[in-house]
Length: 267
Image (cartoon, rainbow, N blue to C red):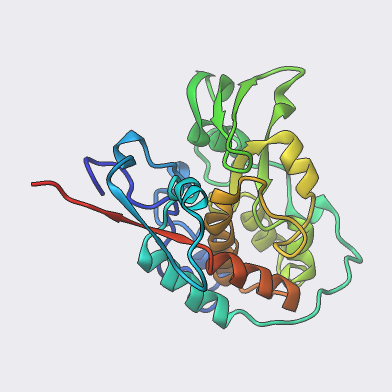
C-alpha cells in the first residue's frame, strides 16, 4: 500500500487456491475483506502515475501502450504467483451437460445472504460505484468505472438501470457444468451471492459475455484481462470447480500477459 491506496488491482485471499472446503468455510473464500464490504477489484488512483514500474511477466513483453493500460489494473507478484499455482492445481475435464440448469437452482436472485438488511445486488452497487445516492438499501444513482470496457457508465435506478448489471465472473450456468450441479442448494445460493464472484459492469458487455468462459469471452478492455483471469482462477479454486482444456489454455495465456506493479517508495 502507498498512502492507504491498494497496491494491487486484485484483492483476493492468498489462501483461495487451497483445496475445496466445506460449504461454510469456502463461501466467500476468494476474498479476504469483510463479507459486506468485499472489494473485488480496485483501480489504482492517481498516485500510481509515475510510481509503478511496468514489468511484463511471461513470454514476450507487451508494447508500452499495452503495458500502460494494463498497469491501471496492476497485480502484485504474489497475486500472480498464487494464481499460477491455483491454475496448475485445477482439474481439467470436459464440460458436463447443461441438463437441469435453471437460475432457480442457485436460489433466490440477489438474496440477503449476509443478513445486513440489503440484497446482494445493492451491496455490489454500493461497493463498485462512486458518487452514489442511497436510500435505505437501494442505490438510486452513481457512476461505474467499468472494468470490462474501461469506460465510465452512469447508473440511475429506473427504466435504464440495466445499463449497469451485476456479473457473475464465473457464470452460474458455466459453474453448473463444471461441478456446481453436484453441490447442495445451500452451496449454490452462497456461490451465486458471493461478492468475490460478483462485479458491477457495463450491461451490454455483460450480455455479450453471457455464460461464456475465458476460452469464448474476455473483457474488451485488454488491460483488465489479467485481473479477470486471476479472479476466475481463484474463484474456481475456492469452490472446487474444474476447467476445460481450452479454458485452461486461455487463462494461462492471460496470466502470461499480466503486468506486475512495483511501488517505488520516495524518501
